[in-house]
Length: 120
Image (cartoon, rainbow, N blue to C red):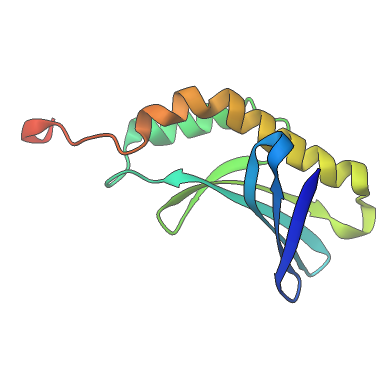
């Protein structure tokens, strides 16, 4: 089961230990509910290989997409508040959990990747 804390008006952080999720930000603005979770820091200056991999992984997602913001790789999704129900809300969290568990082996190759000597 998940736990949550309200960090400010219209913004909550959700943790779901059973699903391996921590720090999923859920915000309500202008009839939209947005979900964001930081996956990892963008290593160094990033790389074409990382960006290409993220785009390829996006094609495999059930809900949401990988994105870049503030030097972080994020997993994001958006629902329309007026038409969503708890099943939709839960489906986003489940899809995030599935994506992170399936994609971790691929994305972990880019985490804190040491710079190669000579800039190669």
